[in-house]
Length: 109
Image 1 (cartoon, rainbow, N blue to C red):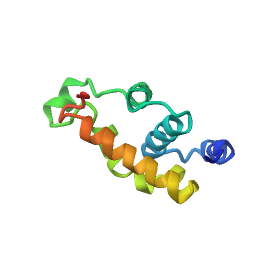
Image 2: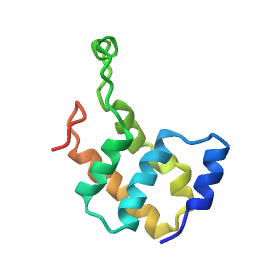
Image 3: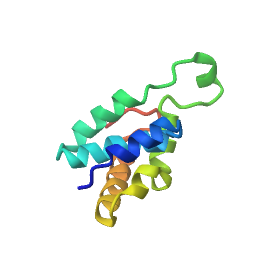
């Protein structure tokens, strides 16, 4: 496992953090600390808040749409780019697992 704190601090100071980076960091921390998928889901729930604006929902937005988009695009994350090949594959596989556990409205099964 690789320590990515220095790269994360540089990314934060440049104000270039994207939602894909936050999702990748949550999943990487889950793997790094050897937590279960449920603990990873809790970490993600804390990082991504659902849309509650009635107008946005009425216009077709999903409560956890940003999380779903971030997990689908996680391979483009800066965090994933810093990892070695083994960790990269683990993070992408965990993102697929999380997506498979999400329902259309963002709840977890």
